[in-house]
Length: 330
Image (tube, rainbow, N blue to C red; front, top):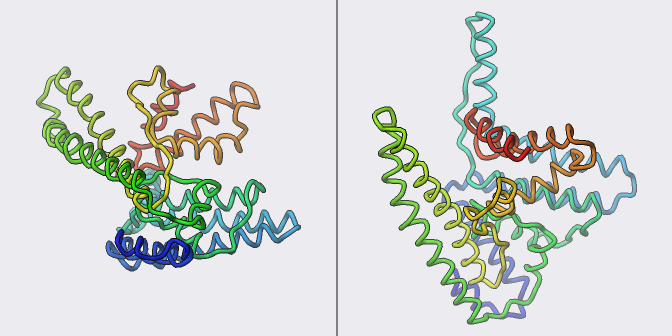
């Protein structure tokens, strides 16, 4: 793909963008071609909704279009990711009434990367609604923004104001940028395959037999687990940033030495930065942010972390994880 991409003349930016979209769809469809319909549908919805918002002067119509985007995107995310969890909660409540009937639990296959590209498309629509950016008329470039394969499945979550314009820029192969890209890919593979995967072998063995281990042993293993998840996640991000550089794109820095943080608040400014910033700009601030007294600030922080927990996984353990991180921050 790299060779074919750079074989296209640099002054043919539209052709390059089209080829990149096809490559991204091929990459995503290789896992399960059925879900190409889903990502294409999400792309078309937000593309036309954003254009409708920009060309409308009716405030009510703009809000209706925004709510349409929110409902469809979050509805798809909830349907695929949280339907089983919601059904389990409903069955638990039904069980409290001693009723014999239970709701069927559907085993729904979760589309890879749906959490990431859903948030990415929503940020675009919300920004157009707020007037902080203009809606693009180029469907190919917008499709590339949504489906860009280096960061499609694991982020970082890019903002349209910074990332979308890169698709229309003339791409010229820069040797030094490509070298940086290769170095990032190698460093990311080292983190993932040497650090994270080898830590996982030890962690899984001890976690699977936790009831037979001492507290001090499990504490040390948990520290090792911290290196595992950092190597895993930041490694994927480095690979994504490196592949993007090889194609002439720049992705945002997603990890900045998080284990050197001096506080919980500082940690979240260094860990999965693109997600933290997304929740700040599109959930925390709209809820009122720091503007409505301490009680409301604490409530807003709690809501953000609970939602963040659910974003990571549909399970009560992730809800507890969100609460666990919220209270030290509060």
